[in-house]
Length: 214
Image (cartoon, rainbow, N blue to C red):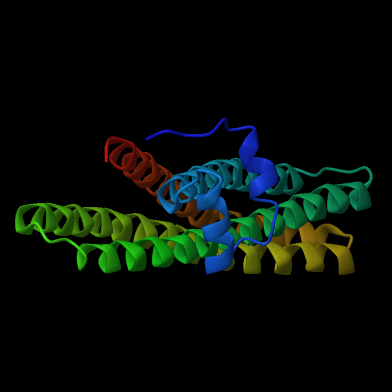
């Protein structure tokens, strides 16, 4: 595929990004829907990598909080709350990236299907149909992996929020004891989230390679 310089993308994709008029405008300056889709999958992959690291960081902060043995407990709360808020922000970014991919994929596949009906050569038509079927199958694998990883985020955030609020309202040994009680469950949930994120990231890389070959 012929890509425009990647420095072009931040400006272009900062515009309102979800309409047929938008995609038509990009195509007029040489950026087809296929390139838009690859770019968005790359962004989603990178966001998932960042989200994975953020949740690791939050888990580390929870672990550190359970080892509190005196000092400024409010400072501990502030650090923990900061990690929670950063995790919430990353979770929303993940959801946004998935929505953007779904939007452009719908436009791309709809256009592809319509163009297939315009073939007069039966062999070329079959070849395009097969390529569409393969690409859509790979896409469905990708989006399923992304949504599976996304689904594991909220349960972790719910526990994070509960513990952060409890610490805020009870800056004492009881709050630390509560953190210790939940640490095992939090560790398991974050570990499962990270595994799902890594699988999704791998699916994104595989999809990008396939699109670049087409």
